[in-house]
Image (tube, rainbow, N blue to C red; front, side):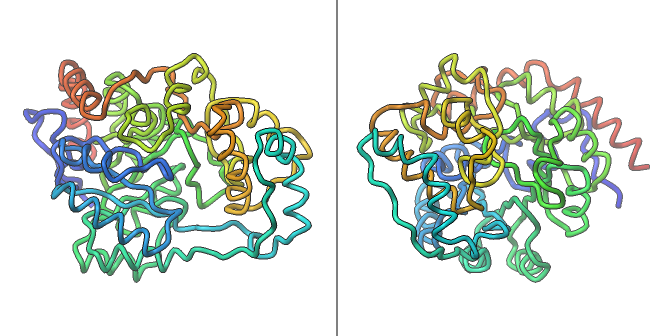
Length: 381
């Protein structure tokens, strides 16, 4: 399939990503999972980027409310993000015995903070099919997803309803499968990214490719426009991503320090301190591999022999510690989601961040973008 080529005389931000998604600047705000807010989503979209809301932890009725609230704040395109895979193997079979074994690693902290030890409760799954039905019925502008590929009938219905799709790949092989499925845009998510790894063909531990290596591999392997994600926090990262062939970027951690995000004061302060200079991967927070600021909780949960429940059971269990730790300001016991470039972020509101990213990128990006447009042109002949 021949790729559309945009003239080298156009500005750096006029790419297939911006034209496909109907936005002015090819900057996607990362979905941020449980730290999303309707306000942040709308601010980014109103500015000309793509605001995103991570809704995987919400019930269908909760998702419906979020969509309505975002639409009250913006008429511009926005994305709702879901996880195709909503649970790990063993989640439904895990019982009280496994729960008790995992709780013992957290119980001392919970009690010391004055929290209440949780009781074992039967697992009630949230079905992806029920969540995505809300998105389809609401005819949202853009549906983004990680941790798999929706069934063909869902993607077909998205096309019928005029809903654009953004799939996430952590390997070139995953990107090719997404491309074959006909998604509108592909995010190449390097292992530097904060939060969860969205791998789905191989285990996340076997899919840890850095953004610098992953992006050009994906660009060369697919026809869809590519967005680079992971470790991008300033204009230097944007220019580097475009030099690697990307036509857009996705930025998450840099938006977390904004008061418009759902991050707590303790989380934001940690990102702006020297604590954020080291991040680590762990399964201990939720049961799935994810990156956050290295702290005592990560060290304890990463120790050999610690019992970790399948996702999302571990996530619900750790919540019993996070709530009292948040009240006590104990950042060493919190889930401080962050990417590897967290130490580059600066205190700013979302609008100021976007203005800075665009102005500083504009100052240096056009020669890099022109070179890549010429390269794509030669490859498509």
